[in-house]
Image (cartoon, rainbow, N blue to C red; front, side, top):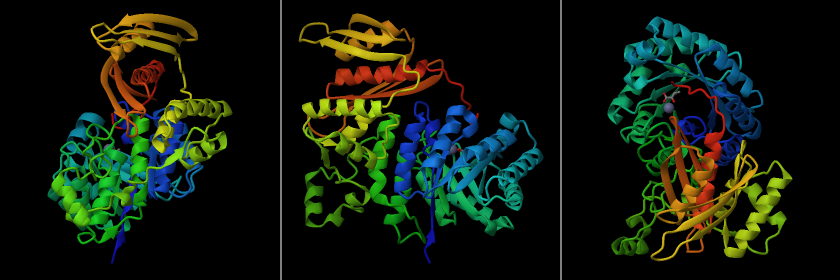
Length: 510
Ligand code: KIV
Ligand code: ZN
């Protein structure tokens, strides 16, 4: 008998907690629609009490998605739960996920609560959440370092209080696969009412074991896995959705479960998430890395040509590879452009945004004959107006010549006032970024600068990712253009616009 394994995606919540990966409301909705198309069972859309923006983003996802259940996170606090319940009002199917820490170190140092108080708060939180929905998930945070006997007590109590899913997080990624599997086995064995709830796992990747730990838990009876696209998430990330799903699908000989995920949507969703967050996927990343299905060495190619199963355990097309299509070109009209974007879940709120994106598309199509979905998505990411956009690029000119110091001349508007500066640098990108900083005086530190090509060929657009830091706050910015110096300036300006915006946001676990 094959059981269903529930896939709970937390890209929009735990993924977003990754420094620099924050997303706007519209970006969250686009990712949620892509997850829905992939047939993800549950989408954790955010932590509504964190800020008004977070609340509105959960609300927007709840209103936009119909097929997946939408979940909101809350600490075991009345206000958190009420905000989560409010944000989920428009959802077709909703879930409140409430949590409190249960490891000795977290209870003593973070919560300053006795174990009895922790149980009391957990029970109260679950009961309050049940006022809003009959689907309530409870997590004992840092379960991986909690006393099993204490977990038995608190989990029994929350099931009695109405929790329908018990999620066991390895919050700090400390467990080993055999140990984590044993924990799930023991919990199911020792909790008298364990059959009344679904066991779920939520593993972090600090030791690179998040997927292995999740799979071990599934073998021990867990029937929900919490994961993220590309393994995005706090610190080293969460278990990667694509790896969990494909491991279970590929090794059906080992599992008595399967998911209902449409795996052909994996690659496009992975690209959407990396494009929006600026967290690039490493080439050798399983399933979605550029080399994951490239059999480069001559010996391998020969083997694959004779019989693909010699070296391939999965089919590239099953996870969405080889579906790259030329979608539009120089002669495509506005309607074709709008329709293709709608198919990619991009809907512009204002007609002016569509017009601006279409103008950029025409410009791009003049330089590059074949326009792929990736080109369109990069173009859109650069066209949607950013809230609090204080800096806008007006023009950029660079002089770069062998034997000469490169010089960039940048004109931009800062708070609607036009300014122009010329600066020299070690290269044209360095000169352009120095000129921008000279005008803005942001005093931020550049933590990451990377360039990659969006599609293949030298006429491809270059996509630049930057990450900047100021006072402990990290943001990222992306820019795309066929000219990589312009792409760099766009990326840097997009990051600066984010870091200059005021922020008042709470982190759920700190
Ligand atoms: O890692 C963790 O413990 C969490 C909880 C909020 C479930 O993300
Ligand atoms: Zn987590």
